Amino acid sequence: MKGILDQIRAKGVAYWITVLLLIALGTTLGEHLNESDLWLEAHYKTYQLLRKLSPQRARSTRTMVVLIGDKEYWKGELARRIPIKRNYLAKLLRDLSAHDPGVIALDFDMRSPAPDLGDNQDYTEETREFIAAIREASLKTVVVLPATVKFDGSDQYVTERAIYDGYSFNENVRRGYISLPFDVRQVPLKLSVNGGKSLNSFAGEIVRALDPKALPEVTPDSELPYGTFIGNREFCRLASEDVLSGKPLSCMLRHNAVVVSGAWSKNAYGRGDKIDTYLTPIGYTNGVFVHANYVEALLGSRTYRPISKPASITIEVIFSLLIAICLAMKLRPMTKLGLVLCSCLIVIALSYVAIQNLGVFFDFFFPVVLLLLHSALEKVREWRADALECIRLKNGELLHERR
Image 1 (cartoon, rainbow, N blue to C red):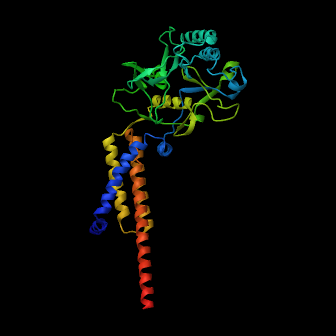
Image 2 (image 1 turned 180 degrees about the vertical axis):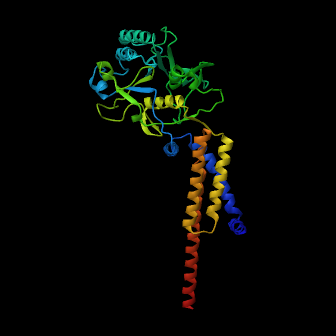
């Protein structure tokens, strides 16, 4: 122990002041960069790795997805139109409701294109057909309509006008906001909008229809929980043309949630990225699967509360100091590397235990990166000092020989 303390003292005050400054810088920088997409993919991969280590495999049990693909959009009756034809959605609603699902949710942008002018008169008849289909379907199942929100001039959320505004519906017709959080690992729940009214998220309204008890309590200062993600292939998927053709469906829709969305290519048939895609822990995927994952995470009680900021910072500082001590010791490079890797594995193990047994998730990244950078710079400085010493000795020998 005395030898370790002597090695720590030997590094000098300047070295440890630099270490502490780097830890503080790393923690502060981490907070800011967590709000940008610079390191988001790395965080997502780390998060998904922790989830894959779980012995319990997550799977979809209550959520089915109906997709409007390239064939229907680019070659079929949808005629590549934006906004999407509402009478087509009306037919889908009627055919899906015949299978007695628990919820039909429509994941489309239904904002009024020109709120000040009202809806375009060319769409009047198809809008009436769409509204009629919503009313018919809602007689026996819950229909969740999409809402969009924005900030007003005072940084308060307000709902944007939608094409279905102004029509009367029964209590089975609900709406939930489809906006996703910046960090899609966090499950959106409830927003305060329009000066105090509450609006559930799109996924929250689906869950409320299937199992209200699965929704966590939300307070104004609640942080959003983290949810699990499963691959798109884990969900039962149907093409909209199969639903409309009357073929026997491969998915059990009865009493389950059915989410309808678009999944066609942006540029042309089979060309370009799919519309409405987002970076997630399972890679780039369509927004409908993000909503479906939220639903399954809530129904399966697979959400985790984030660790508090003070606790997270304390863990980061302690861990970073341990790494700094390992790097300061006079050991062989491979031994130092082994100690650093072991420390990282210990933190990963602690993260795993916390998320599996305590339902708590904490994230760390930047202090360790900066300390490793500091170690590399310190090593470069040592090499430079050794090189200068060799040059000085060599020059001294040459001078001695000349004399």
